Length: 257
Image 1 (cartoon, rainbow, N blue to C red):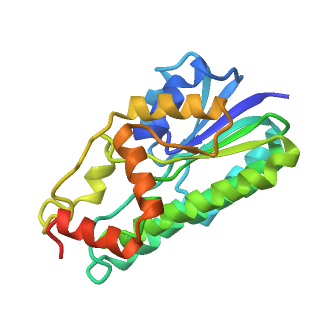
Image 2: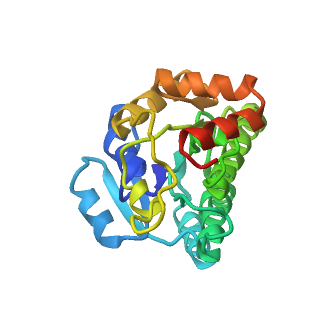
């Protein structure tokens, strides 16, 4: 039975970094790299030694999951790792945000994570692992990043509960919660022609460090991975401070009050 790792959002950002570093942490026969851009996935194949199956799918389209189900049923792989790294965010007021963007975040950040998990779990066995990319935004309600933050809170809660459920099967699930990270995320999140929502980034981490920490935390069977002193401090404060106060601090910091 072929051992595979399945990684969504594999053509760029953290998904791509997971593909590039996977060989250092896990031995599989093949990586199933999923993203919309076929060309980017073909380029990715040239960057790693492990065989890569480029699977061009739009995970906001129901037909994509039907195609993936057919592939799983046909090949019946031993999925050793599933990484749900697809997702996007939009910085805007809920009132001004386009309906397509609001629905898209829910579809890709939430629904796709659940659908991928449901499809792949029957092909996961003892010792298999799941990583879901959440966000530091998952720990607090964030005005003007409302839908994105809520979608990542869903991912965090889903992942931690799923990890508890899968204990009996000895399958581990972990949520990765990056803070501001230098990726192409901002190309879509920020409209340069509109009023800027985020005016101050307390810290900007490199994706390589986030991914390195995630691999370490997965090996330690943690259910949440957070990189960086600033990020860990903020997560702690969001647990002990009233969320109304946290939201007011955020708005004052970004001159949104």
